Length: 133
Image 1 (spheres, rainbow, N blue to C red):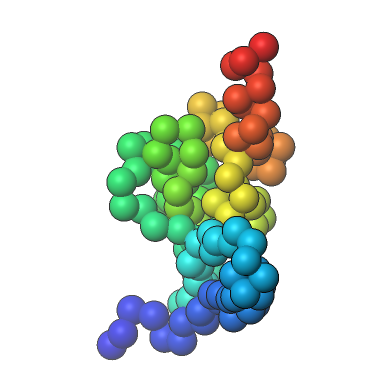
Image 2: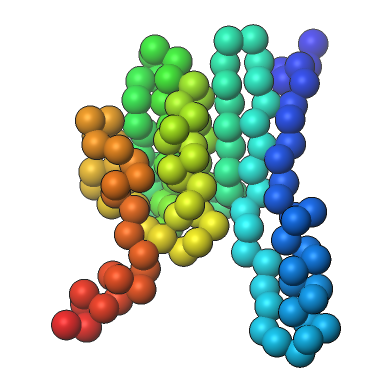
């Protein structure tokens, strides 16, 4: 029996590739930065995965693995590189922003479920400006 009965793959590349191709044809800079993500449902588990865990330095877990509702956030330095969430769709949606748009998440506070993951996001540019001041 397969672990995942019917996975649903949600790769956004079908909507991004035309934009990148048009930019290349117009001789402007273009890149494709969207991270892969998918969400297979298995019985009562809603598994959502985004990014790639290769090369991560640390993992922060939000929620309770024992209760079956948690989100593992994988970091390389201050930057998140992947999220693996089970029955925590709000955390998954909040984690996709930093993964796709170059934002950091306060890793020290990321495990605190009393704080919204979305409020812990910061633009990397804002971090650089704060250091420079």
